[in-house]
Length: 240
Image (cartoon, rainbow, N blue to C red; front, side, top):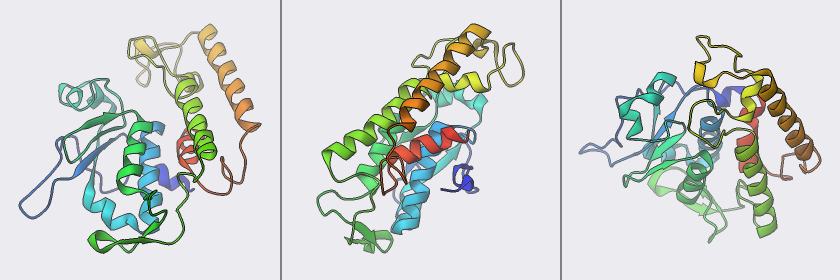
């Protein structure tokens, strides 16, 4: 993976495009809501980039519109109608279903646009004429044990590193100990400041979880020979 993959795509649109778009010439699209500096949203961006490089680029471009929002937009009434938790990523399907939580969105994308478990193959070509065949792309492992291992790596990240598991003021994710300020600044609102005791505890938690992770990843990728959702989840956080 390349650092460039976690950057905001240049074609992203603004929050004004808040509903799945459709015209008489084009069918309704899904909408992915992204923020440039979000490691959790970046895994969705990475998934689309990786799959786009494996024969799905036109399919994804025709099916999904990316909407770029700023951090101030997260507290807006218009965005609350997209995700009442006021977080990214968020996703609205072409059927109007509102989804949030990165692992849920990535699971939907995999089910909708990823490998077909029944045929066990990749998509050859692009667009409506694409056909399935050949070896699996490997983002979702073939065996129950390997899939469970990947899900465990993703779950550890989401529960213990990248989410406060609370939307109330004064709660922050564990990774916040690396950059949230101790006092209010232009980058850290008062509701997200962190005292020394809390920062030390969260730093200890990061050390504990990374130690566990280091002893269990299988290499060369996190779950073995192929890139999986675990890599797409942990990479943006590791370079955040």
